[in-house]
Length: 319
Ligand code: FAQ
Image (cartoon, rainbow, N blue to C red; front, side, top):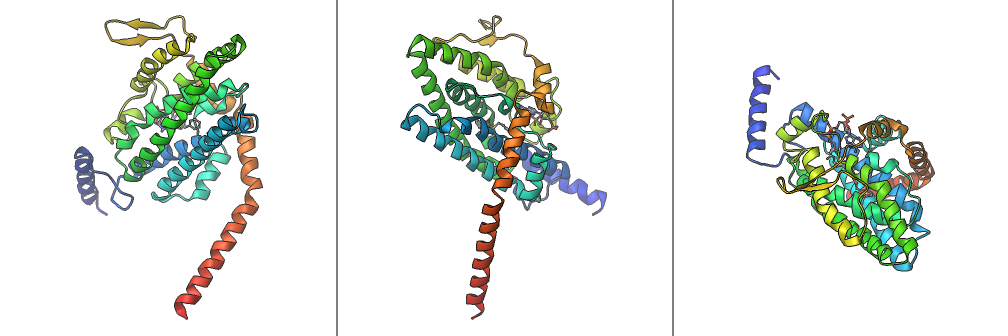
């Protein structure tokens, strides 16, 4: 294709983005748009899959049948979110095997938040309330993102995340209305998960490398800092309802901006975790790779069954 032709296609593409049209997998798109989407959607998919591990740890220790059923359903939803997102990536010409290879070899990132340990039952409450709470704030704008398969997947994902957030808040509420020891457990979980939840929304706008281009393509509709502020403003009143204290002495409502000012985030900690040196990075990868290897026989059996069905269908068609 000549440079002139590419330029024309780029102009048509940009005009479609400006008109808020959805870009579909078979449409022409700049190579960088394709790669950026594979990067973000696959990191998102990996986050859902690795994100099952810290909670999976508590399914067998949930304090009641009701809590166990809800947690089991939540973790299964996360598997589903991962699968929609891997499928959306595949429409852009990358295979599932390549995506898993990138995760297992450490080439691909997944969310920093899942590299922290879940040490008490209250962590299930804190993850639902804070981590799913932050995830919803990040993902609602993605329902309106420019790439069709990603936007459509996000509609369903957000509905499910909303249930996840509520079940987490309900766990926290129950603990906060329980014994002093239970309330302490809830406070301790908030102390440990608050700052990592703020970091989860990504580096500051000044440090972010992809935001500017992703906003132009309407992949991202809001910047990392905007989403972080929205999360804080939404969550502080919820902590008040629970009677818990946000572990930030600098947190203060600003009458002028109508938002909460907050303290310094430890970005060194964030980058350490992203680079693989968080408290649970090694364990998460070991467990994930272990689950993949142990599941080999299931994948082989499923493939053998599918091949047999295909052969049978072909035979029926030609008979
Ligand atoms: N962790 O230039 P930016 C969930 C990397 S799903 C690790 O700002 P961007 C559900 C970033 O990749 C949670 N790495 O990047 C659930 C880039 O590196 P690269 C996941 C991070 O893409 C709940 C570099 O830093 N959600 O929680 C992180 O414009 C409960 C520079 O950053 C999504 O993935 C991080 N936190 O903005 C499951 C949502 N932040 O790629 C189980 C979709 C940044 O150049 C239990 N993703 N980095 O090597 C997004 O919205 C964006 O990708 C951001 C980052 C906002 C995460």
